[in-house]
Length: 118
Image: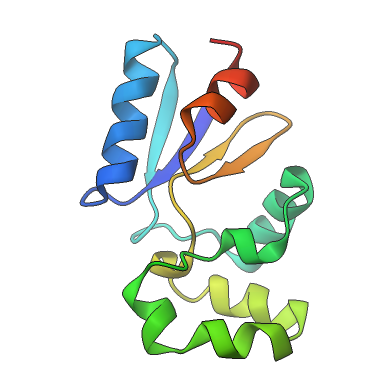
């Protein structure tokens, strides 16, 4: 079953969940603020995604801006970036869609449609 890491007050997450429901797709919601993926899980998702690590950061979030990560990330090691992501679910790009053999960050309807074949 699909896992969708979401934040309940995030309008993009709400839109993604409504879209999944409209397509009849079964999924399990995980509150990213309460159950942030740990470093080992994030590393696994990163490998599955094939995306640059920067795509796992919520670049529009308050924490990202407050920590000035736009300036700091380019000089941070990959290990440091994973450790940072594991500290706070609000740093992680959401929704985070996890399937059997894929991971998508953010909600792009066309991309989700293609991956889920709906």
